[in-house]
Length: 284
Image 1 (cartoon, one colour):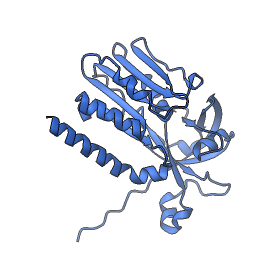
Image 2 (image 1 turned 90 degrees about the vertical axis):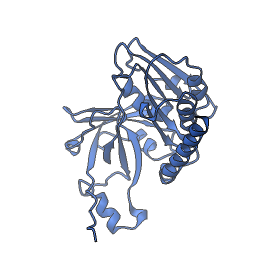
Image 3 (image 1 turned 45 degrees about the horizontal axis):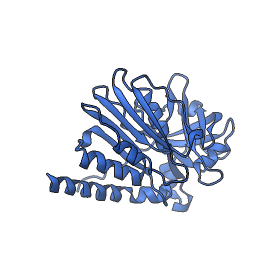
Image 4 (image 1 turned 30 degrees about the vertical axis):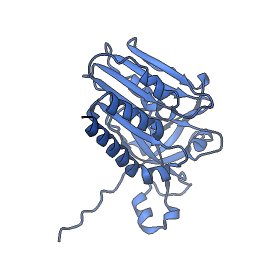
C-alpha cells in the first residue's frame, strides 16, 4: 500500500494595518506591513491573490496562526472564514502589501472590516496564489472586468508593454467609482457606468462591439461569473481564440457568498467548458 503523503503545512502571514484610504465611495485601500509579512512573496503575477482569514486575531492569539491545527482540532463552525482578494501592490523592500476592498456599507465581511480598520489592526492571510501577467510577446491585450477585477486590472495595466495596443473595459456603478490607471498611450481604457443595471450588462456588448486588432491577443476576463461565462463563449466559440491565450475566471457569482460560490465553482466551470467544447466540436 502506498504511503499517504502529508499535505504541506500552509504558511499564514499576518499583516498589520499601516494606512486606510477611501479611494471611491465603494472602494477602500488598506496597506499592510509588519514582521508578519517577512516571508510573503508574490512571484510577480499581476493577478496575485490572498485568502484573508476572519475573524481577525484577538489580543493574545498565537502568531502565526496555525490554520491546519484549528481545522484538525476544532468543529467546522469555529474555523476561520476565508475571503479572496487581489494583491493590488507588493513592495518586498518595505514589506508593504496593498489590498483594495469593494465595500457596501455594513453588508459583507471583508469590505466592512476594511472600512472600519485602524492603524495597528492585524489580519491573517494565506497565499499568495496567481498565474497571470500580460504576455510581452502578444500582439495586443484585452482586459475586462467589474469592480472585483479592478485591482488586478490596474496592476496589469502598469505592466502592459509599450508599443502594443491594449483595450481595457471596466464596468463600475458610476463615474465616481473610476480610478486613475497608469496607462501608456497605446492603452485604450473604456469605463462603463451601469447604474442600476445588472453587473456585466454593459461589458458583454462593449467587448462584442470591439473591432479586434490584428495579431495574437492575450486576454484577461475576470469578475461576476455570469458575464465571465458570456465573454468566454464570445472569445472561445465565436472568435475561436485558444484557451492558452485567455485568463478567465469568475471571482464571484450573483446570489452566492464566497463560501457557496467556491463550493460550486469547480462543477460550474466543468459544465461551462463541456458546453463550450461541444459547441466547438459541432461547428468544426
